Image (cartoon, rainbow, N blue to C red):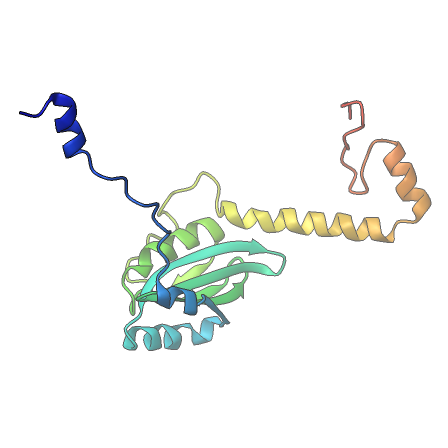
Length: 185
């Protein structure tokens, strides 16, 4: 007869070796691809992806110095390809929702947050998808970027004497208070 200790030893499983993180072999060979596109090419590009068996993944908007960058992602198996384009607040971009129905969600979201109009949406919430408190809250980042650019340009044009006196007075060249060494502005 086996004792309780012998039973525990007999039923104990050997420790599994430390697992290596899984890396799909095709993924190591297939980096993400980014290609520049334009609104007038978008429907044709979307149709080509659909016909080749790709799926629509998402649209990501990002405020840049040049405007709003839209990043359209398409996937097939382990592959991911991205189309990028720069548009401006108020621009009209053709909707790809007639090609990829799930795009209506992302396009409505982009309309609400960035103020870009999508023409031909299969379901258009008319900028009430989220109902944000302020119209196009993400588009306001462009104004912040523009103010920073203007301040940097003004600082670059300022003479060394002006820049030195601004720093001594506790303001940076953009006119905002800067942090002094003692923690006071």
